[in-house]
View 1 (cartoon, rainbow, N blue to C red):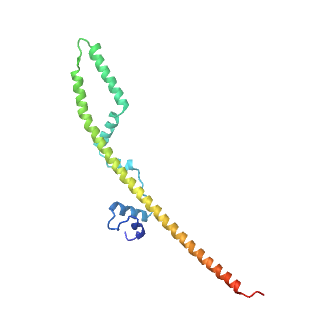
View 2 (cartoon, helix red, strand yellow; view 1 turned 180 degrees about the horizontal axis):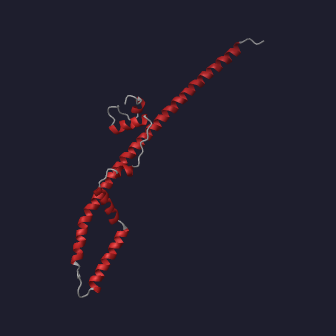
View 3 (spheres, one colour; view 1 turned 60 degrees about the vertical axis):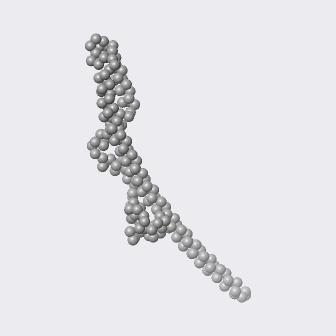
Length: 181
């Protein structure tokens, strides 16, 4: 940490002891000129369990128009079969008690799975926000570093120009002090 210039730490408007671990790590990465951006999807997914991936898949399917339309078709077919086709020997006659039982069980299982997936999405959002913060912080530090370098270069050029002007002025003064022949 001592290799990191103090002017970079001063941009946090806090002492180096007061900045967080993330900031210290990003300062170190910036100082070593390393990349920090990563594929957040791959990085987040590599730590997920089979159950978490399954919950995401079920939520993705259960929340799609394809599922909704196919389920509506299933319900319509169920109703038609049990009211029109099997008029005398319907396995689930109107008011479709067995269908209601199936729908209730499906809802009882699907709701917590979707909530698990929503919790994972919230985790993913927090993870991506933290990665975005790191990338933005490093970008800011790089911009500040570039400003510092440009400022130093401009100041050096100004000093050289002043020196050249002083020499020209001295040369002009010497020329005007010489007697004309």
